[in-house]
Structure formats: structure tokens, C-alpha cells
Image (cartoon, rainbow, N blue to C red; front, side, top):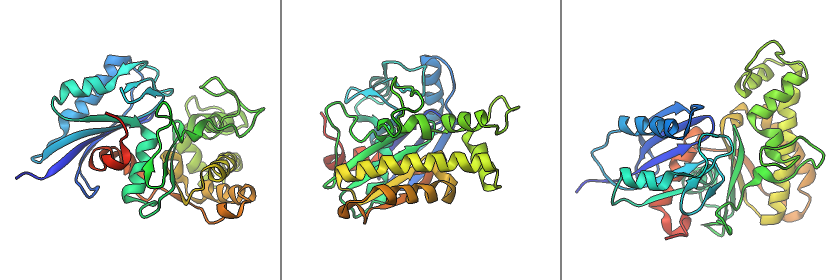
Length: 310
């Protein structure tokens, strides 16, 4: 009898990744590509090309997907803020057509990170976990009492749109002063450039920013502190609301290490004043950049805890 595996898909504003995942959360094969700035069908063709490269002799038991939001859940029609080519794109239906007979489960990419970290990562063994992505966007997924919380529309835990500065910058959601408007990578690099960092460079990324901060560039360091403080405020609010045990942060910007986490921790401790909030651990995602794929697979392997539809 062939061993059972899940086809996992992770789609964000920066990258698309696909993999074959075993029941222990190990990724057996993996392909990735940058998310192109093209139309809906061009994006789909990019994803199909990645899927075509994957090979497995194991029996696939389902397809789990984490995709940037918002989306119509559980129907899986996606409209990611940071992937403008997809608006109302029927991602779940298209994957069902490609993989007839298999269950296909689509959720937010930050929810997938939360599931991966709860199932096999930094939140393993805890019952109350917030998983976050800090990258092209800022998102989150919420697990309480060991179960994924979806909310009315599948968007519970979306910490990126907590307001941390009411008089702050406009956000892509239409609001102002959201955590995402401050801490997402493109906004952070734009702020730093406006302050005089790499002003001659047409396109400067958050990865460039983190590298310069490591070398001690004062504006780059200030930008990372800006992001860390905003994250600390948002996480303190979420912790007071949800009585959490672990907050696990993944995504590209989380790779900056102490440059981000030191001001985050300082700010979080300054604002998390209720006694029950003081024992919360705020840590980098233990699974690193693979959290989303592992969590997407968990939608199939651990559906009793993580999938509350169909």
C-alpha cells in the first residue's frame, strides 16, 4: 500500500511554493518561484508550472492551500491585497479540476503558518497560539483551545489590520494606521527611503533594508525598530484579547532576527501589562519559511482540528 501524502501550496505576494508533505510534516519535494505581476491566468500558469515539476510515488489524499487574503471562505475565491492579478479568482475550483476526486482546502496563508507552527513548530503542545506572517503583507491565524478559529468569514486572527497608529499611514485595505501599513516589507522600505536610505535606488527591498540594518545603517536600524514597535503593540492587544500562550512569527521580515525581535519584545512587554499576558512567548517560526507549506498540509492531515467547513 502506498504511503499517504498531501500536496501543499503556499501563495503569497512574494513567492509561490508547492511541496509534497508526509504525515509527520516533513517536506519531501519542493518547488518555488517569485509571484509574478501578471494577470489572473498568468498567475495560474505560474502555479501550474510549479505543480508540474513535483513528482511523488505516494498516494495523494488531498490538496491543502494557504493563500494571501482576503478570500471567500470556504469556497476559496481569492482576492489577495498584494496579488492584484487575482480578484475573485476561483482557486479552489481550479485546483479541484486539476485534481479530481481529492479534497481541496484553501485558507489564508497566515492561517497556514499558524497551523504549521501549532502542529509541528514553535506552538506544538500549546493550546492557544497566534501564528503570523510579516512579509509583503502582515497576517495572522488564531488557534484557541487547540482548534483553529475561523470567525464569520474565515478571517479571524487577521492581526495585520489591527490599528496601532490611528493617525498613521494609509493602508491598502482603505484604513489608516494598520499594523500592515507600518510593518509590511514594502511599506517599511518606502518609509526608510523617504528618510534618506538608498534614495538613488529605484527598487529597494525589505531584504536590502535588513542587510543594511545588520551593517549598522542608522536609518535601516530605525526602520526595523519602527516595525518591531508596531508589532509589539499589535501583539500585546491580541494577547490581552485572546489569552495566548505562544506567538510564532514567520515570513521574510522575521528573518531579520534581533533587529526586529528586540524592539518587538521591548514594546510588547511595555504594553502587555495584565498578569495573564506576561508569560506569553513571542518567537520566530520554528519551521522558518516552510511553515506555510506544513500548515497547508495540516488542513488535510489534521482536518478535525483545523478545517471547520464541508
